[in-house]
Image (cartoon, rainbow over all chains, first blue to last red; front, side, top):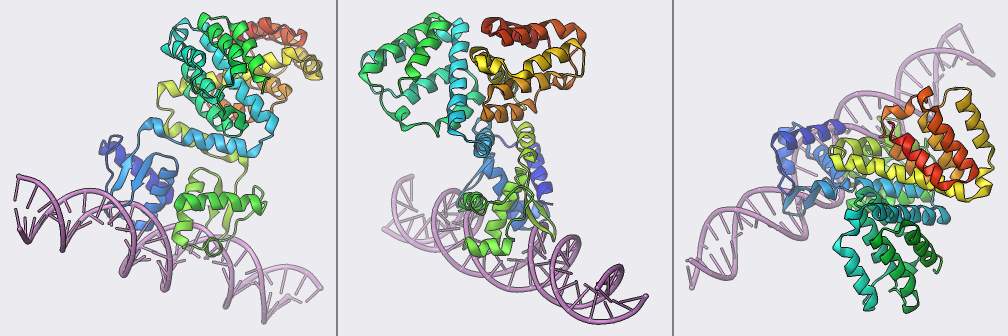
Length: 201
Length: 201
DNA sequence: TTACCAAAAGTGGTCAGACCATTTTTTCTG
DNA sequence: CAGAAAAAATGGTCTGACCACTTTTGGTAA
């Protein structure tokens, strides 16, 4: 019956045309309309909340969340990680996503034209605060693959704290090379600069 | 507190070393051990059940399910895969892992020497049963990154049924090229053959 | 002893009610 | 009309109860 209530809730959301951000009927109303008890309704609601499909505010109500905010991929990633998290594999897999993002950007001239590259270039030159994590995240965001980004974020959680530190002056050169190569579409050079920089850690 | 209980349950499963198929403590025991009420424990359990992580049998108990049986993918598809972009991302991410596996193998002569390549080569030539899925899986297994394999297996669950079909005679050529290129360490050629083959679908 | 069956205990499924904390709405007061 | 106080609504938690089903236990008969 619990799964049935989840289905009924999905149906109700569709029928009532409840949009993201809007409020769902209260728990007490739901258990009347679905002809069940509040406990059962709550079990279904909490399940949907774990998935990030809805959000409950104490005293306020239950709201439908934005589609993009779903935590499904996050949960999926965290479970895949839990099974096999050999440190080397986590790093290797994270780098897989980083390298492919850079490759993809080099191949797509439209992505290389994004204002982000100029911005990053300037940041490095001016020695503003910029971490490895930020830089790599921007690369993957620019690649436009949101799933890859979500997976990378999960993998990143395991990586060395070195990534959270600001980029040291000594590292400026390879980073600049990396950015310039990406911006010009030099795939091979970008990946090599990327490798060189990665192995400095 | 509900999310906290989910965490505590995951922790408990890890600490007690409960293996897939084994029984979890009963709801009444859990709410004592976690110092909470049965309702709260049930809300957490039902959430994990919706994800397919556990399974409750009426009168029997609650059991930890096999990792492969998780319904994460199923849930994922029913909730977010309705969006075009998301589907594209899944395929793109799967191909990221496939390409990087091939690249890595090409670069490591020790991996290219694995007997699996001769075996696959023979299978294609003899027109034995061989699916795209099997072939790609063998590549990723050979790359030695178990985490990448796990992620790929999850993503593979979405892919077209075409992957489950045997490789047609017309496709033999690019597949042979792919295998030969990998075996010889011709990275560029391998990836191009791989692309050519992928786009045939 | 062994096989079988019934009773008992254990367990998840559902429900009802209560109380609390917080937010929202209404009402009252200046 | 504005602001504050009261009331209502809402989610969060807990307790106890009963039901349906399964597992275990114990005893009885072959």
